[in-house]
View 1 (cartoon, helix red, strand yellow):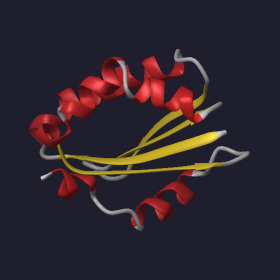
View 2 (cartoon, helix red, strand yellow):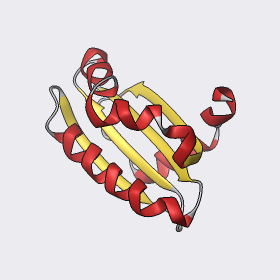
View 3 (tube, one colour):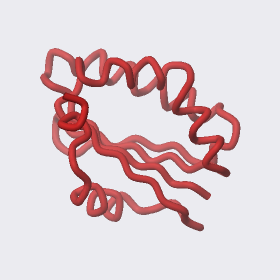
Length: 115
């Protein structure tokens, strides 16, 4: 199974409401997508949010990432977020949140690469 995790930080409290609304909708879309085995959202503090999704194949993950609300959200990432980190790997188990946090600490902010 392919596990994909992310850390997202909205730019401000003013963007938080729309950020949370879109995140919930994307999570629901994920759960209904072909090959999805797990979807979970979590927050640490007021402006740090995390996702875990697990997929049967990389093709299932890619199809989800490149379509629907997720695709639209990715195109607006720089507008809403000051930091975005993402990591994926193969695993037989869904990782615990502690593992997700630790792994993402080593990942560079993708927003810096987009500028």
